[in-house]
Length: 204
Image 1 (cartoon, rainbow, N blue to C red):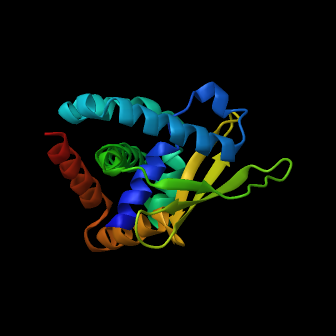
Image 2: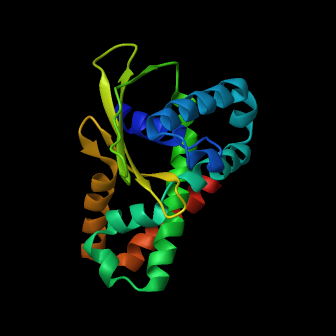
């Protein structure tokens, strides 16, 4: 549960930054600055956000969505099933998967209690279109938890998050395993309906 919480919180933290700046800023600087900004926003407005879930969701929706490549992530999550899905199924999955992540991350933000984030040395080869930013989370008690952020340079020149590895475990791979089993058993339409039902329940 702790591992899931840290995944969600840090994944969301990476998102809070001006879109135009994301096109020129180095990935490691982007991670640090956005983390600091979102934590500051959460700390300053915790009570008002806690009282109004809609406000919290809108905040995350506005600040997170522009900085993640949900289409790329959805393709990675569905794996071989992406190739057999029709265009409508792909678009429906992207919408529901994105909504599920936004609401889950928003809720997880309130569990942040001041854990320290350590940023590891970063190197980016000239002309590279992919990058990995490595950090560690220092828990109040317990071992350090390594986080590796996978980013991809999109066609606009902006770095976008496409995956996160927590203690060696890929977020995308975890979803691909669980969703793949659901699709195998019941089909992709059933998976989409299940995600939509969860999103509707959380929104109530």
